[in-house]
Image (cartoon, rainbow, N blue to C red):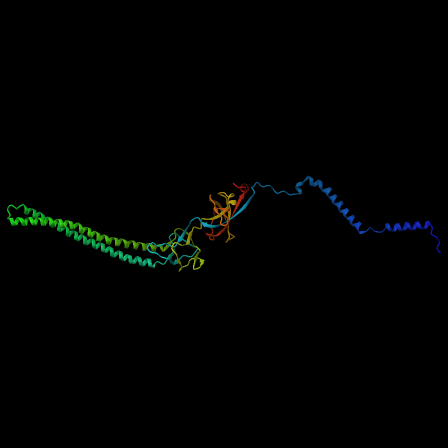
Length: 379
């Protein structure tokens, strides 16, 4: 049986147990709190050190860009098509001498060819007109000869009639002289002299009356031949004019451009051998040195535009080409839109500076117009 433990022995044991507990390391939660507290203290210390320097030089915190005196601007893009300032449309001719439903092309310059004023652009089949001209020319020569022949006959007949009238006048004068000898003549000779005088008067009167009638009849016959001759000449001139119309020549120096038309159930350019209706536009001659772009600006964009505004022009087909331009024309009256009657469009024309071989009419183009801030608000 163990002896009872005294209080002196119990107290040293308790004190040793407490020392052992205090020497154990702290748990992980306390270590994390310690690191967070150290980090916050470091941040506060860094802020306290750097704050006086940041307050003295605020420009060091936010770099400022140098201020420019130029007015801020934005770009307005408009879509349009190119067109030539100087151009002439070529139409299939309408013939005056006869009705022709179609015209056949026998000769045609290639599209994009350089032409001079007076060069042949297209020639249509004109055999019928040339044959008509030759036939009418022969008829005209025949009628002209007939007119000359009738005029010669009339001159001869007139001279003959005038001679007969002079003879009748001489016979009348002789008969009047015989009447002065009635006193010395017998009764029978006096009666014969009277009859001779009356006959001479009637003959002269008849010759004078028939002379005028013959002249009128001869002039009418000649006039009929002249009318036939002139009519034949008009038909001949019409045939020659139609033959000339079938040869179309260039009205100016430029480039020949063939239009795309509907033919034989499809769209395409005309070729040699194709048939065209009179009055159809199939070609145009343009001067590529002077080009412009026609655009349609709606009412919202129109208020930002003014004449003389500079722009850059881009061709959709040739993105590498960029031309400078200037606004030249602004229509004062708008037209209705295709899809809404409330939307209005104003035709606007920009001139193109410079030229290039690829710059042709009817190309889609984009026009970038620079708008300054004072023009953005309208007016």
